[in-house]
Image 1 (cartoon, rainbow, N blue to C red):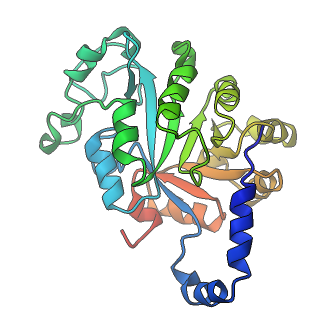
Image 2 (image 1 turned 180 degrees about the vertical axis):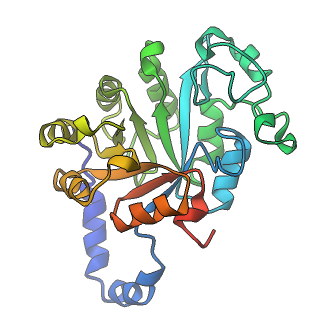
Length: 275
């Protein structure tokens, strides 16, 4: 079931018709962001991706959200890492799912970005929730959930334990390339916004978008397939559109011109020059 923020809409309408708010809006409209700035794996252009250093940098750079990749250790701990192996971003080797949490935690997840980050650890999902909720929005990507049976239930439980399974001004969003996983999350967490990720134009057809809109709140495509028509179609179906991954000012400027709702970027300052 799609999430509807009736209460929020009523509050917004109250403010809209408040003379004070109208006057205030007239003075400040130029300062308001028109697009959410999502720090991809943290501010990954400046610090080692999916580490506390990268997420702290994103907060420092005034990102609206941090984007995190969730996987699971051999012994069931939810951990934050992008690749299904540890080879690229740590000093270890092997598949995430084949390593225990203790083994994962001993790895250096920072040196690949520079000696100043030596000793950065692979964070846990609960660490990220506890450290950043209330400071910045969290866009949670379930990475390869097909490798981790029951992962959706584990993520849902962590959120429920922190009362994050209720509307939080969309400051918690869950997304994945695995559409069946997102349908499952929608059943487990019916009040949490859901996003579907894709880089395929086959998923931009009228029929495909309509099917996504039955359970998703966000359609999140690679920027290479974004067009004005696609943005209009997504909006017409009641979804928002967040596009990824921006690694150049040119790409950021393109997406800003497309009027997308959010830009997922390694460089938050490309989206918001005030950073």
